[in-house]
Image (cartoon, rainbow, N blue to C red; front, side, top):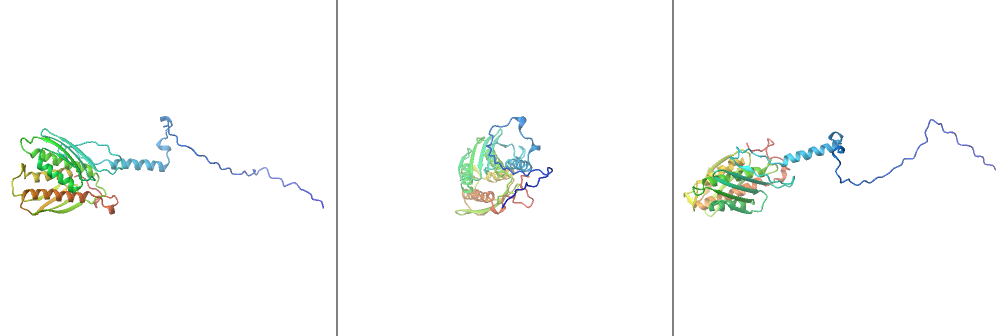
Length: 287
């Protein structure tokens, strides 16, 4: 039996011969050497997702910077620039206030552990600032010199103004916080109720009946003046009521303890807020 092989049909020249697809893989290592300015990509050459990332980084940088009130709003207090890493979560306010009457430096960490370092030249005020740190779990560093040879008025006032400004700085845009705080603190026969709102609107309602004019060398009239000054620069609504009490020291100390606990409640995070501003207006700021 003979087998004959016939030539395959001719392929039209108009149809190109199919080529096998060739797949190659290349692994590149990042070039750590910065490109010269002339070879760096322009914004127009970046892909949309790259531009989106750049915009997000710019927005984060703006949000990370806390609002800075003017010198007039803070009665002469100046904010000390302390570089804090973006997204570090640190809520720290640092203020220096210098006038012809006083020289005050304040640093407050809202997420502290209760560290208190106070040296104001007014022993009773130092004792009260210790209560603020201990019961508010704030780190409070206050150093002040002033004309206490005249009286304690100017130093008491300027320390409070600086603390209020430091709180304003540390709170930033106030996103995700509880905003409201309410606490009643007993101290022996004394019972003090404090309610506050970090609203951005300064207001003080004060109702203490302190029976003596002084505790040690401290003029008890300065208690109200302290809280009024703090409210003015922090943008806080604050109500203080005395429910019971006969001893001046107990009344004042219970007031600072109740204020510290209410402030701690208001500044702590509300996980259900998911970082939103606790206001139907969408903003809380110093008015």
